[in-house]
Image 1 (cartoon, helix red, strand yellow):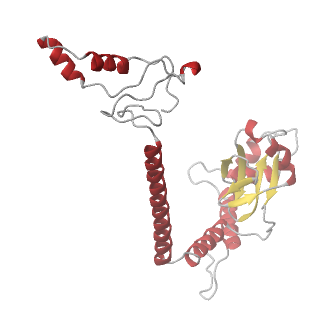
Image 2 (cartoon, rainbow, N blue to C red):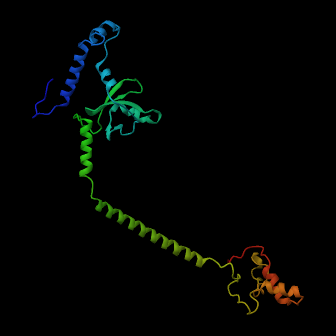
Image 3 (cartoon, rainbow, N blue to C red):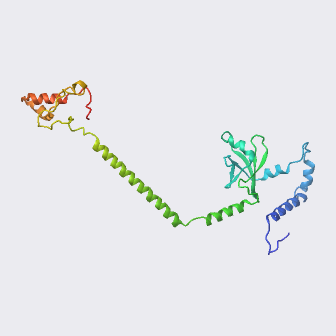
Length: 270
């Protein structure tokens, strides 16, 4: 058995050569139990095919790892690498109506992948979108990404300080918004009429100062149809007098009746 020198390192191509030689040696040796030679048995039992021999590319694709990816405007993404080719342009235009693509990739060379054309069914090579054609293995690609992730990572203190500043800015903005909403509600509440107080026209007198202005000048407009007087007595006093049969003054009773009547049109000053 061949041994590698201690000073050197075995290349991946050397490993492939050793595996191929081991397969050839097995096929040319006699089987100890069946006493047959595999290469002779294959030559004797193989069927003669009318078509051409197997295409080396088809054999390679059958042994390569497979994956399924959806096409996007950037092409096809695999292991954080975007692959694109001009013949993918028409497929991108109708990507919403296409199923996921079947692809093959060679871990020994990630500079391109093999994509199955959905229209013809043929396997076509697709290069990297960034234009790099230098062969790179999948293990080298992952190691490089790990190195970039480690060297490009910022200290946790810097990220924490920026996030705290963002949170403080958001909280301050929210506080200002709440203050503006409170001021707006207070201004609207101050301008809104009080439904508890009686509605008086400008120039009318307060309670107990005598009758208010007449609606004679406004009757032509159809705004008010009764005479506004002083405020009526509380309802509980009227109920109590009626229960015990006490007399009710005509003026105040009429005033109360007229005050509790429903206007035909709303008051324009409310």
